[in-house]
Picture 1: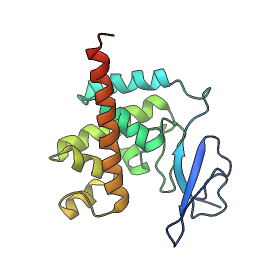
Picture 2 (picture 1 turned 180 degrees about the vertical axis):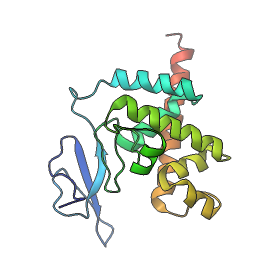
Picture 3 (picture 1 turned 135 degrees about the vertical axis):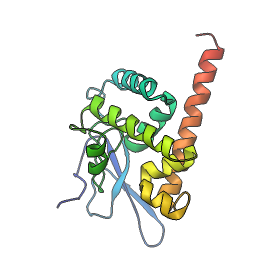
Picture 4 (picture 1 turned 45 degrees about the vertical axis):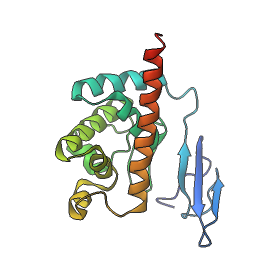
Length: 184
């Protein structure tokens, strides 16, 4: 059953879209057709404050808005340090094995190692591409695909990913502005 989602993984809902377009959801997938839809950690497994602190630390180090990194983490893993995709991406920022190697990530399920490598990779992509949208598309589909297509690749998953990260980022930015304006 390699590649098959672990049945009953705490905090994971799986989704399958059948040929008629009907979406099915379960926490106990019975086939490889199901993919993780959303994941959340058990409340005692993750120190969200530590995650946010590390996001701020490494965002500052690499000159990236922490709200953007937080949006990527939210969309990639829903703050689950043990998230693992069918494609092999791991950890909070869902780093693929080659990206882990390129960014010096030795322990992808370690919160700090994963965030540091993910923020470093995002910084690299933001420097490489002319826009945030292209950098996010490269984070999802890979830089070579963005370059080959001369823009955001025509993959529905990548297009949804870019829209979702930008939407979550905008929400985080709006909440930050409200917080600052309220003088809290």
